[in-house]
Amino acid sequence: MVQYIKYFPKPFLDDLVTGRCVPFVGAGFSKNANLPLNKKMPSWDDLGKELADSIQHYEYTGAIDALSAYEYEYSRPKLVEKLYQSLLADCSKPSATHRSFCELPFNLCVTTNFEFLLERGYESVNRYCRPIIDEDQLSVDSSGTEVKLLKLHGDLHHPNRLVATEEDYDGFLNRYPLLSTFIANLLIVRTAFFIGYSLDDPDFRQIWQIIGDRLGKLRRLAYTVAISVPAATVARFERRGVKVINIPGKAIEYPKILEHIFKELRSYWTDTLLETSTSTEDESLAELSLPKETTSRLCFFSVPSRLAAYYKSVVFPIAERHGFAPVMAMDVISPGENISAKVSALIDRAETIVVDASTINTGFELQLALTRKPERVFVIIEEEVQLPSDFGGIIYLRRPKDSESEGEQFRQLLDSFFEKIANELRPALSQEPERLLKKKEYRAAVISAMALLETELGRRVMNRGLFKPHLKMTMSRAIEAGIQGEILSQGEAHNIGEWMSIRNRVVHMSEGVSAKLAKSLVKGVMEITKRIMQ
Image (cartoon, rainbow, N blue to C red; front, side, top):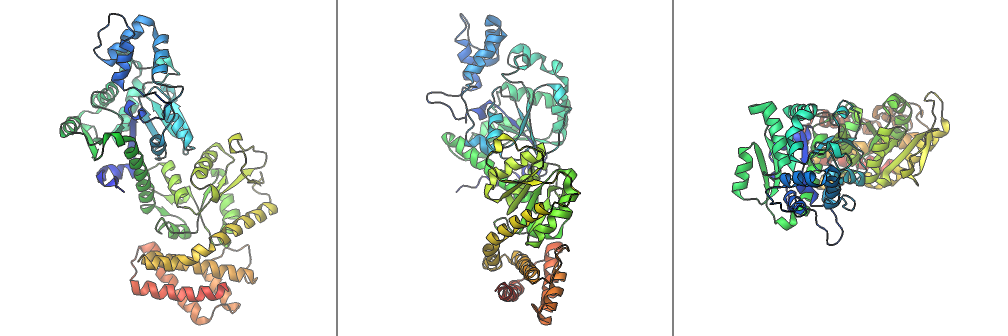
């Protein structure tokens, strides 16, 4: 399979991962839509010609002139009605290409398109999208994983806000100075990624004029993706400060190629984000350092921020007793400030996901988790909070409204859930150290082996009643209890202590591990683990 990520310059990929990239989506991207039979999404020029045919004694000279003439001849309402019909706004649906783009964890997307394909695309992948049409919406900034969709030239639901005619274009900068300034300020620190624009596209030219007028030579290099365009086109773009990422392929394969490009970009983004992140919690830090295809103990918690302390003190210990490494987004320090990217990466990497869907933001994250890993999502809802109707059929657990309450039944049900998932994962986790050894992933094999030993030793001492349930299970406490209960010999305890020192250097100092040392450690761990698992 062709790998497209290699065609993307490293500076662009760096900006992507650190949240310094913003996509601009143009009319060309809408041609990828799913349409009824015998229907075709028009290009900008096709749209102009279609409207020109409706005007008597009119000679076509360009799309904007044709739209202007149509409005003059038949009125603004008729122009909007014609655009709604011609752009197939009532029947066009997002394609796999749209869905692949909408899964990229951008927190802001700018479009000059009038229709609603992006809104529908985000909805299809369970991501909440907040359209921004008017300037007064710019001051409202809600945190969380929502996508802000800036519809720079309005849309068909807001006829007075449409930028479609000569008068609209000529007066845009004066009528919407805040929008113009917002775009310019945005691109002082962010890199533009143009999708679906040509050099002659009036929307592209106007955006680039805004940026050029505000920034001049300080304008950052922008990028656009194209499929096998000729050298002359590449040169024209680059003279205007736009770097062309020219992907080899056939024009007819454009939608499928774009779909794969977006999938590769998302995979690169989330993988690299976690590789360059650190966690404030030791166990989750170890799990995040494993290769992404590894079966891990990572359990991602999406909870209301006001309840973070409650979950850490009440729920985390329950998960840890069953061998899980719980983590919240706030525990992970990542480059950039894109919460969406961090949450998306953690959902992809986590083996188990717990969502307290009692707020709007965590409800959005539940939608995302159910799209990715529905079989590994556990839902919690606060007492008296209603689960949204679109989550019908989901099994969930009620949490006491008063976080100070004992909630013994709540804890017991959580314990049962984690025990069930732990038992399901146990066979795969027990095979990971040796599987990683065979793949020559020596650092990962050491981390996985020690995690397995800690989990199984903790389970054994708990089952024997050698450890008080309310205490946090650590390896040192498990070793001490293991010696007292004659589960471990003094020699084994000494070896485990040495292995833990190696594991800690691997996790915290990124120390390498030789094949000989990894094989010796894994062999010793597996011998002890197999014995105590019997």
